[in-house]
Length: 350
Image (cartoon, rainbow, N blue to C red; front, side, top):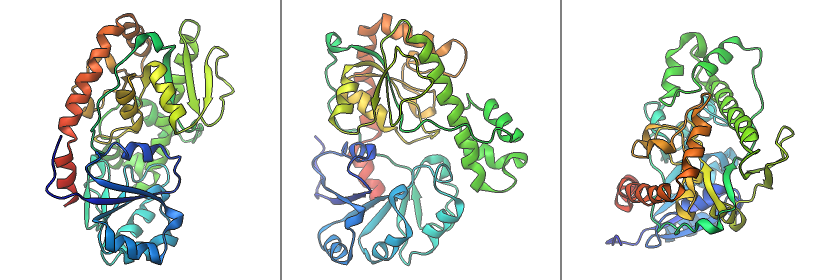
């Protein structure tokens, strides 16, 4: 166990205790003193207690809005806003600049590596994610009654059907696992110097990838036991696929424990670890990931691309040699713990 000279006191604010991200940050080790609270509870009295009793304060950007700005301004300990993917789903360039420029003492922003060069006047932007600090659950194959689990919060709508440029470049880049943001900015025809429109491009690629997986799993459901976890049952979902309404507590973890393979798509990021990946490794389900560079040490059999045969070939190979691939989980956890150590996390905070 890593020993710290000082026990750091950290408080995290979330919009809801049902957030997947809450469980994700609980991956931090117990020798940090951590408290979780709801954003709606933030008031002047709470600010006073934070300044008196804590070393660091964390907020998630997608939970944050302008009405809390005055309270954040009065917090005089070191504060962080977790802004993993700016310019994507709900963060426009205008909002991003507001959050940087209006603080007298700006917070540090935690975001993915691909956005580091776009500080826009920020005090500091660093790429980081929770410490991987757990012992993986031993895999009991006899209790695995789900072959494939696919967890996603919302089915992406097909956007911009008539936008020829977005459709063309989104299809062209469905298998681009590099820096999409940088490529978008350099493409004058696509970006037209408006970074705000990156969200349109991002969501179109996300739709195409998600739709590909759904179609493939519909076909595979004739032979395999497949479960979906999402907010609403999909109208085009095969009758052979079990549907579970999204639940971010113990019910979700039980499904992960029952699953042999968990499809862990990446939010088109170059350093952030998706919480589904953390859950898979922790609760004994083999993660199937896209070949982003942060997964360079994963067995190639656990990485798929969006083409005609890669996806199903990987799945059948893993299921056929399942005992062998269960050993890969332990190797992955070991390497992630070295890369995402407590010492590195604390160093980033200072």
